[in-house]
Image 1 (cartoon, rainbow, N blue to C red):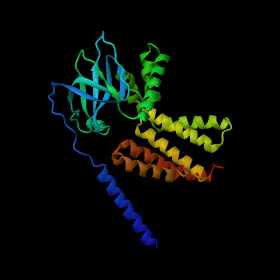
Image 2: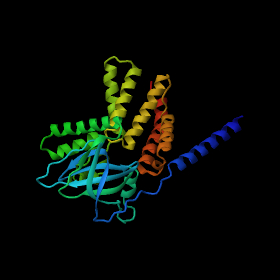
Image 3: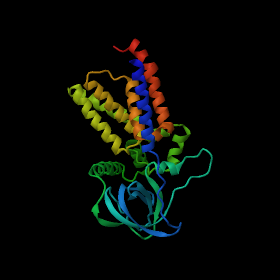
Image 4: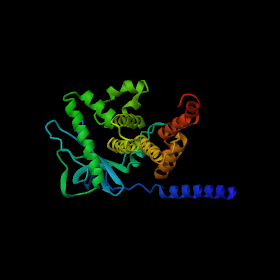
Length: 318
């Protein structure tokens, strides 16, 4: 009966939510017994390659599964930068400490931001030391390929603007989300005018890529299903290479579900696609429900699906 189906559906939703909450319940943060000025020998796997900014280099080191440290190495004027790639097994000498927040009310929770990336320490390498490369590789081949593409893109942008630090930093931020070379004075105007989001990779970037690629493929007389499949692959590749940030991944997922609907000759309705993306994304990361970016993005798209789409359907859509 209808009553029984509704009851079973509600119970399934309730128990799925309870299972998701228990699965994603955070464990106590890992700890390392070390003093603030104590230099330790750390060994681990490079899971984020080296990024260079003025007089320093930075990379992420995985010391144990789901326990990472953000390592900073201050460069001297006569020292040579040592690039590290994903999957290298290294040993360093560094001072390590857990990240902390400023106690200003309503300020950005930097420690939680790092913890969601499994980063529980910040480490500063001792001066006049360099990472020692150990034999063997670690990590996955898939992410090694993704980070190799990202590094190639960064190198290509630097070759396009030799000696122009402003253009290099801005183009890396706008195109692939690499913000290590941005300086505060460059971004102040963006912050004051409320346009800083243009320097952050979001669903808008994936939308532009998908729209341009679909247009070109259709001009090349490629049928719709093949064009959608190629565009889906390109959207996911761009979302991963640009940093795998949440808005880009959500946009790629939404486009993928739209392509699946078209494959089965169904009309991709905005609210249905939005609901499916929200359910799957919250099952993967329930904490996103309390993130302002998640709330604003889904509310905006929901408003488009609830009010704009029916208006267009009844007026101007063929």
